[in-house]
Length: 227
Image 1 (cartoon, one colour):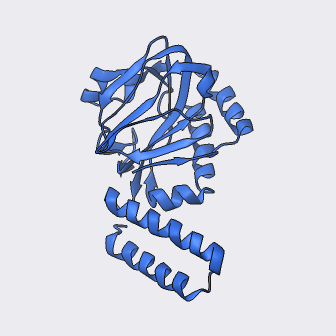
Image 2 (tube, rainbow, N blue to C red):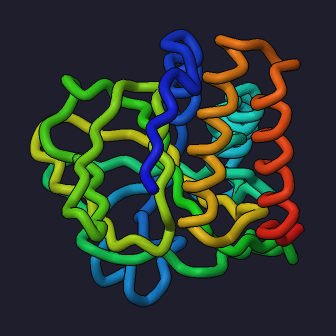
């Protein structure tokens, strides 16, 4: 499942976030890499837990809480604090898979990475290359979104970032532990929720079919959730 969530941050919010993180001290992106990723990863990153990363990360989490599509698609139980990376001068991230468990350094907070998220903080015209490419059963899907938009995809997917040959690609990335760990089950729930909302907009929340399907939705969540 790959879901695009538009306008998580407004252009004004993106500008405020960029002002903070662009002025911060960046480090080698392999500071947070696992063994496999370290062999494939060539970029820069804000240090995990830096004041700028915490401030902008909190703003992103607040914004996500106001996005019904994110809640419906992710069914989040826990969200890893957002991290930030930057690609320029040919930097890239070759094909890899994200670690199954992410632990916040210096704490006992950990998440099972069911979903990966990338929030774009550079406009597509500001750089060449830098497409996030997610490999799947039906072929590769390349994603390069406007600043402020987010893509959500299965953390178990093989994926890569193509080389940035002009400008700089700045983004936030993080992981979500869902209440429903199975990707196919989350996709069914999202499809059902979307259909219920469309039906309710036409026939009203009190329509008998809307009520019945809402019951089916919640009973599936009960069956499949782990929280």
